[in-house]
Amino acid sequence: MKRFTLGLLMMLSIFALVVGCSNSKSEEGNSGTASGGTETDDKETLIIGIDDKFAPMGFRDEKNEIVGFDIDYARAAAEHMGMEAKFQPIDWKTKETELASGRIDLIWNGYTITDDRKEKVLFTKPYLRNAQVVATLADNEEITKLADLDGKIVGLQALSSALDALNADPVHENVKNVTEFADNVLALTDLKTGRVDAVVIDEVVIDYYMSKEEGTFKVLEESLAPEEYGVGVKKENEALLEKLQAALDEMNEDGTAEEISNKWFGENKVLK
Image (cartoon, rainbow, N blue to C red):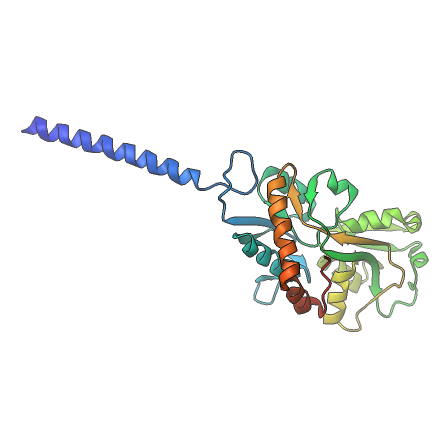
């Protein structure tokens, strides 16, 4: 009797082990991401890398919740794709590395399309026009045009298109010093305290802060460079790019994009 009981227990243990392994493999097979390679295509979540201090595109509100035009835009696009958007704040200086490593699926937060970046990522079609402009304090009478940056300290976000725009203009040769910041908030803070004389910044960003802090800043009439925003997708992941672009096109057609733009800008700025 004891032998029979022991044998039965051994058989039940082996059966439980086999079933457990089978279930484990099944669960692993359903946990892929949208980045391609060995992962599966049934992922339900898009990991989107953002700069969470880039108002009004993506930033934290008074409740510390991530909000903004790009946040709403990305969330709606994911919904059109039958997926869910998850936003991952990242160090903007390492955005392409984060994408290439697979830790994020998309770069989507006022991401300017440049020739250099096209070598590193795939881009959707442009969805918003922007420009790099020079901001200074509203009561600064010394700086009224680009030439007045001669001998001045200029701040900007590190590894952003602001630096490219400044370097592309002859005025950069006469600037006293360029101070790079982790984000635009820090750059504008140093502008208000006088540690920098001017800041090169995205037009959509400074427009937002000028609306929130009336009378604090002014923008020079001469802009440094026009540019366009796009969404960055990992190289060789054309399948995700195609699916995303189809969703963005559909949002233009059904009015979703216009509704989101009106919410944040008071007009439809989305490109078709």
